[in-house]
Length: 109
Image (cartoon, rainbow, N blue to C red; front, side):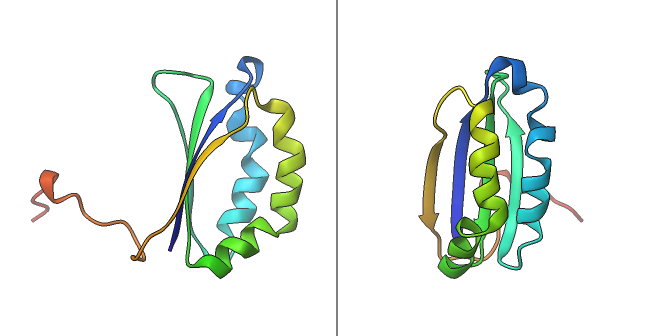
């Protein structure tokens, strides 16, 4: 799978509204057949920073996402809300889902 984490520094006046700003983009991306997950979180230390954790089935699905109409629309729509260029880590990972963190195993039985 293609695993991506991106940090978005949002202008302070838009930080509380960021989930609304990205709502359409998020919904459209999650509907892509190759999207495994597309999840936003807000930093506990910096209320203007949002972290996006996303994964796509394979390189083809990642390319389809980057070429989609909703991605191109987001490129135009999101930038005016940003204080800085987003930072990203993009990796090809040889798995299809989250692994369990064995060091913190929970007895669920």
